[in-house]
Length: 287
Image (cartoon, rainbow, N blue to C red; front, side, top):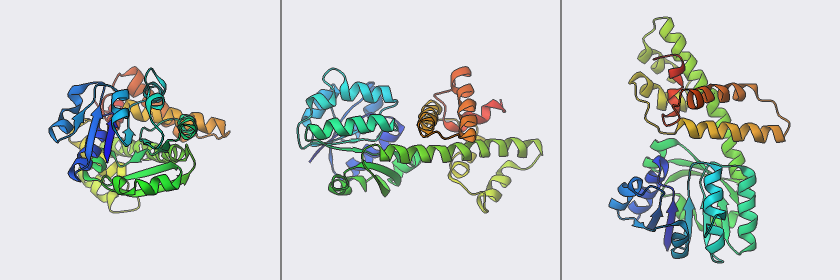
C-alpha cells in the first residue's frame, strides 16, 4: 500500500511521522521542500509535484493552508482530479469550505474515486502524539476501508454524513474554539489587572467548570511568552470567515463568533501577526 501526503506543515509533519512509525510507505510533496526535511529524514520519499505524487500512490492525503490551495492542487494544471485513476482513495484534511468538499466529492465519484473530507482537531500536540479527532464526510465504507490508517494518528474518528459534512463539523469546532480563545484571553487580561498570580489562576480554572483545551494548551505558552504556532492565527481567521459565511447561508446570526473574527482580523491583517499561533491574540492587550 503506497500512501501520498501533500502539505507538510505543523500538523502534516506529525501525521506523516506517525504513519512512518507504523511502517507505511509514504511519499510527500510540499511547495517548500525544506519544510519536508524532518519527514524525509524519517524515511518518507519525495515527489516533485502533486501530479507525479498522485500517479504513484493508492491513497492520497492532502492538508494545505487555504481553500484556494485546495482548488489549485485538485483542479489546477495536472491537478489531482485530472490525473487520479479510478479506485484511488483521496482524503482532504484541510479545513476548507463545505461547498468545495462537496464539489471534490461529486466530481471524484464520477471518476470512480473514493473521496473523504476529513479535517482534524487537536493541534500540533495531537498530531505529534497521534491523538487527533477527525471529522469525516463522504461514504462510510470508504472510512471503514481506511480505518487502520486513520488510527495511526487519531484517537477519535467521527463520521457525520455525505460530502462536506466533515467540514461543517469542523466549522462547529472552530466556533466553539473562538469562544474559548477569547474567553481565555480576556480572563488573563482581567487576572493580570487584578494582580492575581497568573500560573495559579490558570491551574485553578483548569480544576473547575472553566476547564478547556485552549487554556490547557495555550495558557502556559502565553505565560512563557511562547507564540510559536500549534495552529497559525491566519488559518484560524480563515476558518472563522468560512464559518460565518456558512452561517449566513443558513440565515444564522452569531455575534460572538463575529466578534472573534474581528479580533483576529486586527491581529492578522492589521498587526501582521498571522504566522504566530492563535494564542497571540493576547498581544492585542499585552506587549
